[in-house]
Image (cartoon, rainbow, N blue to C red):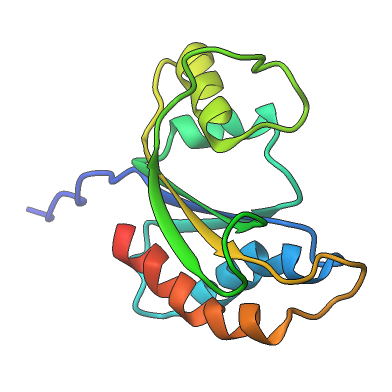
Length: 153
């Protein structure tokens, strides 16, 4: 008798947010690119890069077991990595085109009936002017941020 297939495990979703043409704002996609080259990640880890969070992502998020948002931060010192849990927003305008992670989780819960456990890995930026390269501080933090993502996966 054949062995039954393993039970379906919903994917862990890692979303790198940022514009790669705005210097350090491209750190979210840079971290995701680094993770995509990591053969040690479980096969159920899915990655995605976006310029901004939009309502269209809510269905994909609802289907995930966990979601990790990776984004630049203008409030942290350049190169500093921070990880935080994020919960669905309880109020606010969730009909906007660009959403925060908590607002997008709220859309997921309202429209699709669930919002997975979620985290935000933030990387402090030095320069978000036009350009395709990361500052030295932020480039040095990409490996640490990828490690932080692995830690919450």
